[in-house]
Length: 114
Image 1: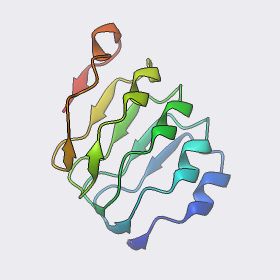
Image 2: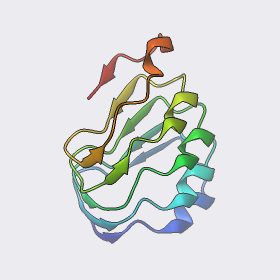
Image 3: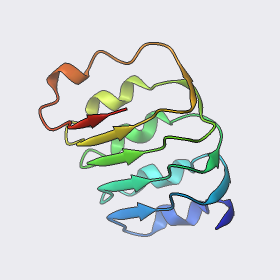
């Protein structure tokens, strides 16, 4: 797949979004973070730009969030602290800066952070 991620995906009650290893461009549509049923977001190995939106905090059931190997920039949002069900969090190989929010000490389910 190539091109941008359609914002209309935010209207579909998905449990998993698997768009990894494609040639996707542009930013992560903020509308995706309105899909409360999402458990898995795999956008790794694309060419996405922009930031990880603070609205990620709305996905309180999210278990797997992978956006590694893109061109994302900015700070790692402190909003990640509300994602207490995370098991996998992959943010590596981007242009993210700043300190990792000091919230991961309370995560009992987090098995993999990269």
